[in-house]
Every structure is written in structure tokens, then in C-alpha cells.
Image (cartoon, rainbow, N blue to C red; front, side, top):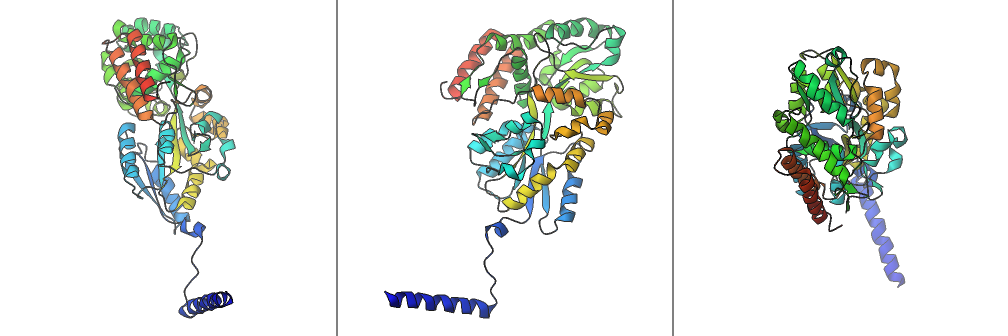
Length: 422
């Protein structure tokens, strides 16, 4: 067998000599192959703050530039386009800005890759937001922006009546029913068009009565409860009694915001970005807008935890650079810009106590309380089916085609089928 070893040594020596004579470079290691240009895909940037942040990265990383791709600004369309691209096996996208509710679904489908928790400053983030980025005990994304629903109200109308903002559904219903008509206003609206926004509003109503849609890891159904019936009844009664206008059945975030800023609503449930917009140029109610946590059945309600997470495509060729870019977007200076330039709530806890930021964004302490008390949407590998079921039942109950009692029973049956019979 000695001749075989000798021949092998000879072949190896010849190969080394040949490589040296030809000037061939050693093959780079895995880390080198994971670095390079990126494509960053996100929903439409309504406030135009992202392009400058990407340009700043590109000036400092000329060999690893990032191309920004903006999809439609509605969640459902963005999700559909991302999934279509990822499921096709395309390597077009590297870093994805995804809704927090999609993390479990994308992870379960193998479309995004697990991340090293030690690479990111997770301890500096608001605790509830980190939970939205995990699935099956592993980190699959990094929180980027957060969100919690707030109740916006006309400060001038409540002040004229000598009343405080509502803390319970009963107070909200009474003020919407009695005060709003005196000023020619509709009482209350949320996002009741059948899309993801309706899932959020229905889930918040259920949670704010003490209930839940799915339990644990999303495999056990919890919606068949008195709390769920009370939550749906609160919304259905508002439409039946007229203090929620029929037009609200066609409202998404932007349509409801426009109605409030046009001076047509006393109360509005929406995300934090509305505060800056409603008090800005072009708003008929500027300077007369306040915000408080959502009311609930017997006291403060529970918002759905919104926002977005940053994930790396499972097929990205440049995962090391992608992790660096995510760390950049979640760094303290960039998170400050996310709030100041983008009017989006940051995930860094320290920014909510910053005196300068609180002075320019007075809703921050209220938002922090709401985020810390908020609950994520159901973590389910079949989240799309869960959301569609909630939307369908919510639409029928709000349109009074089905009673809250029947709607809850139907939703429980459909979710049981989706979750595999539990």
C-alpha cells in the first residue's frame, strides 16, 4: 500500500506546484462566500425614510451595497408577493421586512433561516417584541419596529362636555352615542374592511374582554368563550346602534385615518403613526387630537402587538452581510431615525424615555405601556388560514348576517379544522 501513499503525495505536490505556477488564489472560506450585495424588500415606505438609511449603509459598504425593493403598501399584497418569490426558489430577496404575524409561518415553511441571538442586541429591546421573532424555540428574525393600537379622540369635544377619555367599552359607547351627534360626528371606527386589519380589530376585541383566539403555540383553539362573544358583540352592537358608522365596514388604516383627519369621527382605533399625521399640516383636527390606550370590557383593553421583523431569506447567498445589515437597522442611531423620520415606533426600550423624543412625540409613554401590555397575534404555521377565518366570521358578524354567538361557534369549528383538531 506504500506505493499508493507515495503516488498520492506526488499528485498533491504536483497540484500545489501547478497552482503556484498559475497564480491561482486559494478558494475562499464559507465566511467569504456569505458576503456581498443585498436586496432588501419591504412594503411601500409611506414616509420615505428608508431610502436615506439604505444610502448611508451603501456609503460605508461600497463592496456590499443594498438595493431597496418596495412592494405595495398593503399587508396582504406585500405578503402574497414575498411568498410567491420565496416559494419559487428565487434568490432575488436577501433581507425581508415582514409583519410580526408572518414570522412563524415563514419559519415553519423553511423560507427564512434561523439567526444567532448573540449577534444582535436583543436585551436592549422591549421584551414583548422579541417573542414575535421566535418560532419553535429559535430566533428567526430581529424586531425592527413595533406597534400597538391606540384610541385617538377629539380633545375639544370631550373638553366641551367636561369628560375624560373612555377607559371601558361602556364609556366609549356612551360618549360615541351621545357626544358625537352634538358635533355632527360619527362615534367610533376601526379597520373593519375584510383584510388583515379586521383580524387585528377582532382579535383586540376578544383579548380586551379577557379571551384569546388560539392558545399556546397556536395549535389549541381558545375562541369558544364568553369573552370572545362579548368582544364580537361590542363591535356588532356599535354598528346596530349606529355609533359605529356603516362606512367603517370599508375602512382600512388609511381610509379610517382620512375620515378622522377630515373631522368626521370622535374616536378612532389606529396605529401610532396617525398621531403625527393627525396633528400635522393638512389635517382639519390638528392640535385637537389626543391618544390613550384602547378601552376594554371592564378597564384598559389589550392591543394586538403589531410591527415588523427583519428576516434573512433561506436562499440568500450573503447571509453574513445580511446579519450585519439587520444589526445596522436595529442600532440605536437608526432606531432613532425610524421614529423621527419614519414616524414608526422603535423597538429600543431606551428611546421611550428620551426627553427630547418624548417632547416631540408625547404619545411615547402611552405607547410604551400599550406595547408592554400587548399580545402577539396567534403564532401559527398556518397563520394565513387563521387570519382568513377570523376575517370571514368578523365580517359576517359586523354586517349582522350572523350573531356573535353563532359566529364564535363557527370560528371555533374552522380554527379546529385548521389547527388539526385541537
